[in-house]
Image 1 (tube, rainbow, N blue to C red):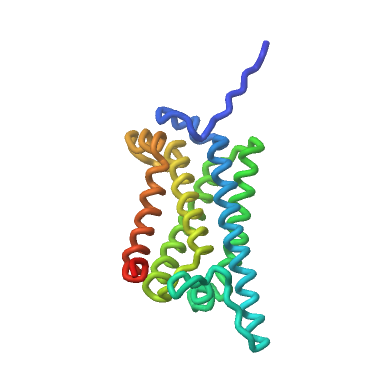
Image 2 (cartoon, rainbow, N blue to C red):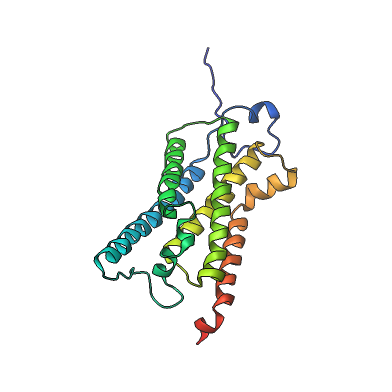
Length: 218
């Protein structure tokens, strides 16, 4: 007699009952790859910013100046952002937090690719982490546009990665029944999850465009 084992996936149908959604779930290969890619993008951005921050500090000690390669003009000025007080919101350079956070994202993605399955509390905790990340990025976006008055390209890459990560993990939890939601929302996210991060990033892009409209068009 052959025993059949059914693996519960995160992309299960909206009609999946409560007993199933209370079990440990693994994500689809697409979700796993998305975690690895967004985590790698955020880690790369954090690594480059950290290196440039160290070079800026070294230059100050030696009495020299250092201009990051991504400081292209008065608006796209990574150096201005890195030297602002907002760049160390917790008393240490923000990208150092990113080095740890995005590494965790990559580890979760690689674990899913290897077939790992996690309980509900794990997915919700992971989702809470991404919520903190997108909230922190939103604060940094406001500070960058309206207080520092400069953009950092590497920071922008981390923003895009974090926003994409947050919405896809949230979609996973909604579709899996870990987060309560009406059936129409589950169905929508099952087909059109990509719409939400695209709109989110589009709104930020429009804010950047309008904030420096005269500069872009001059």
